[in-house]
Amino acid sequence: LEEYLQNILRNYLPKRMDTMNLHTKEMFDKAYGDRDWKFYRGIIANCILYGRPGPILDVGAGLGFFVEGCSRYGMKCIGIEGSEYAVKEAKSRFPMEIFQHFMEKKFPFEDNYFSVVVCNQIIEHVTSETARNMLKECYRVLKGGGLLIINSPCYYDMEQRKEETHINLYTPSSLKKEIILAGLKRVESANNLRPVFGNSIVAKLIIQFIYRLCPLDFFCSTANCRAYKDLI
Image 1 (cartoon, rainbow, N blue to C red):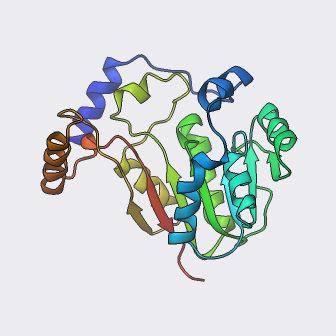
Image 2 (tube, rainbow, N blue to C red):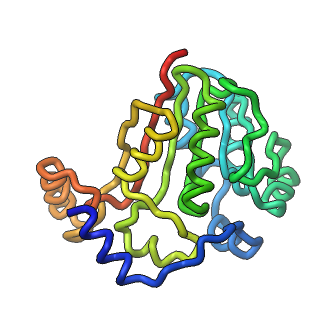
């Protein structure tokens, strides 16, 4: 059923070129103009709640708000980001460790260094080949017992599919397969459900009930997960 639904959507929407997809200044202003580091406190909390103490890597750090937030809480965090503009803007705003790096290349860090790696709204912006390299590199730089957090839109969210910079959307199941292929065996879902029947409380309860009976990716609005590296 999942494969059938994906084929329908592929035929329904226009295909996009699988090319390097770096945000411009205008794109950053549009997407993040109303944000600051406080917007990312929920992800910081998840790092503390589900991860172990130690250095954090932010993959696709954008304007560096997450790195800034971690720094303000006394947590060591390093960011890597493909956009030269974003890196310069981040460093001009707040003193932080953020570097320009293209995600299709090997990460500039030694093996087993980070306790937590965060990929927040990045994997959908890179090609499938680059995403596979990213995941393998996330696995390599994670310590044994380390945590990988991925937040991304779901393939079945039609509004997110209309976004031109979303060139590589996953379902929860397809993302889990890629993560396991990269070496991380323990993968936990952390997804939100689509408002299939509306946004009322009753509608949300109905979709939650249906999802418990039939947990199909089609009902998800996100492809979010937490994955752990085996202890070495």
